[in-house]
Length: 151
Image (cartoon, rainbow, N blue to C red; front, side, top):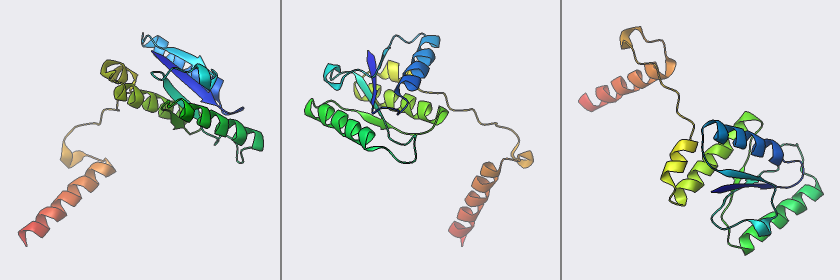
């Protein structure tokens, strides 16, 4: 399996490709990450991530032309792709999620499951001593709902 990272100049392609390669390698996931291949050399069964134009406040005309050309080439080949936005770790997390979603769409359930970041485990303890605001909100909402049903 291959993940192709595409994007206009200065959109963080190489940094994202490097981060994904490190992440997948440390988890012993056998996936090749391609750093900025030509859209014409991307196979339809590759996971294709297109870096969005959000790293700078205003995308240059050159970046916009390159982005449009990549999108047109992928559309002409009928190659599915997902656009990845965000800064730093946020972009990496979005890319990992997008890659897992695409892997699942391709029927690669095991690969998708290995690529996903595990959800942080919520603390489960005695509710009467819980100081978690989300937990308190949920309990309060449930009490209000029960009160409305009994009236």
